[in-house]
Image (cartoon, rainbow, N blue to C red; front, side, top):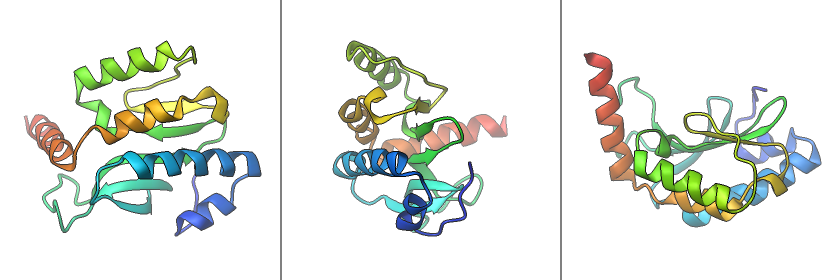
Length: 150
């Protein structure tokens, strides 16, 4: 489900109440844990926490590096954790701690999907999203960009 919203408030207002409330809880937890210096924007049709181009302008696609994003899709809600995609140990630890909560993990490469708030261990997810600094994320970006050039 792609949104044409230009602000977080507009994005949430477009959603059914249960999804808006769930994403508001997730956003609150993320805002507490994510590294300082990220910008919260609407990008790629979702709520994105990004490394500003003024901090890191040399991205491979000219777009800010997405650290974490939150979206409401057709059949689920999702947290896109780009910060986990290149960090093997962090990803493994996240999966282990997530599963230890007893909640079913539905995860892609860096996307955690959930249908309702009770399906998501919010604090665990926010903890791991916040564990990757802007500097670490930029280094992961550089590694990825170098691999694309080969």
